[in-house]
Image 1 (cartoon, rainbow, N blue to C red):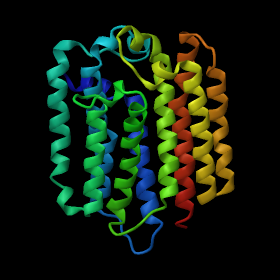
Image 2: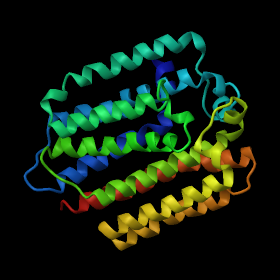
Image 3: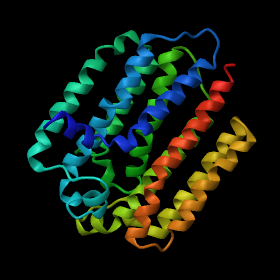
Image 4: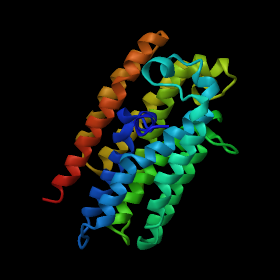
Length: 280
């Protein structure tokens, strides 16, 4: 398996997701006094840019091979990982994650625990024996959680003894679980044909979209209670896109789905800029 192939497997169009939550956590850590910029911030920033995504999506592609073969989202928008490359993906994931673990003892216990939590949620979302992605409800929780603990890890890399607002953690988890649940809707047909249960196959498309709508609204309202009232307005683009998704064909739904990565990047940037302004 070549380097270019493993890069493609890592989903470059999703790189900002994991890195973005890490950066938000790092910036939040800097809003406390007495913290300094360390080399670990940049080291693990690189980890969550590329190696973390090799782990998440590489392992996902290996265990999802059978259903991916029937999924138009995978055969058009993304790619199906050939069986002969499965062993190589495991090797790439191990070789790109293990070196970073050697630096964990230099960090605080909270940072170490949150990094281990990331590995747990990222790996067992796709892998047996848990394979959370085929357990309705648990699928969205595991997928959402590995983004959230990445932010917590970034916070503790910068501020080893700090404490943060758990309301914001709950808001972030609602946001990321909604993000996963929405991404499962275009997969309903392929997952059902493969006998795989997800939150979307269990609830159906429209009920899943109602869940996403409620989660996004609650998430941004929780953020507005802690940060600024204006942040509640940032839920509007999500509400519009989710409402547009009701009763859509698979092709139309996929077109809307593609917009979410850009929207998440913009909203994450706005939130990061707001935190940066608190440092000025």
